[in-house]
Length: 96
Ligand SMILES: [Zn+2]
Image 1 (spheres, rainbow, N blue to C red):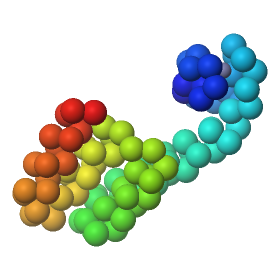
Image 2 (image 1 turned 180 degrees about the horizontal axis):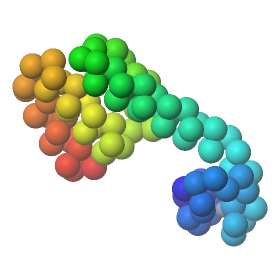
Image 3 (image 1 turned 45 degrees about the vertical axis):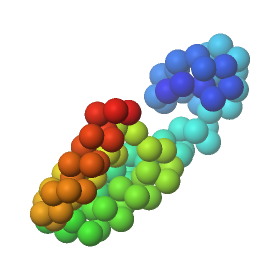
Image 4 (image 1 turned 30 degrees about the vertical axis):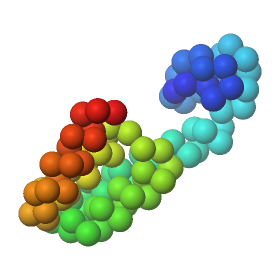
């Protein structure tokens, strides 16, 4: 994980930055919430519940966007047979 203060990279489990000693506990908690939301979205997608998957992906994106969210959103749109949205989202994921 990248320190929001000094941009040093740290272990994902670090609670203080190795360089500037900034408290990373809140960042770790927020990232854990995002990982949880992505996991719930993946299982919703696996059961074919595209709407639930997209809702959880939107929540994950509100925490922090990224290529991983865009890829899952593209898969959810694809499973929902919304091909134009899947294509647009896939292209956004490639650009980020
Ligand atoms: Zn730092």
